[in-house]
Image (tube, protein in one colour):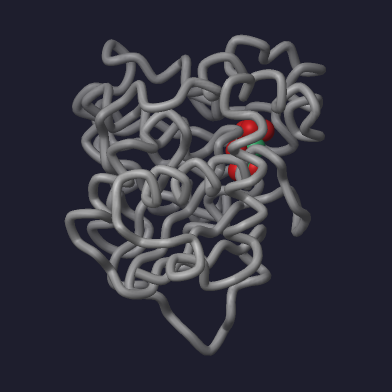
Length: 241
Ligand code: 3SL
């Protein structure tokens, strides 16, 4: 297995496709997607464009769908949900399809949707994603951070490092064998430094601070937990996990 980490979707090579692409948006899209599926949601369908989301979801029975929209950290007016994973309880999402559009995370999913395997990962489901990688052994793996509007994010990088760190800990692979680019080594170092205080790291992160200003303290606390959900969000058809 060769692992490449890209801090934003824009940094992924346009002329290549990995065997497995793992999209990470810890704050908060992939944490929300993992939570919806763990809570019994029928599926999650991701859109970068809000108008397209509305048009496609109109064809779904109203009692079987939920629309979730976030821009700039805030809920989109007229949608049932924003992007807080804490709203995605079984009472709310069970048996329903979540149609979701967020500022960065759903754009990242769209970028890699042509890969043969597409996963959504966050800290909360890290162990399940790592188990899948160790069982399937895809040759070329990309972890794609969603970042924030084209720039690096600490929370996505630390999650990428947490995945790489765990793959190394559970296999005979050496860091030099695993690392396809320098980002892998630096993400592992970031995780090693902060693994016991992930919430503290989120408080340093620019998007963590943005969410704190929006009173989303509990979301940060929830998303900073590692390995609490045994769920594997895997793409079934383009854009649908
Ligand atoms: O950028 C995104 O896709 C979102 O996850 C951002 S937020 O955490 O909902 O503000």
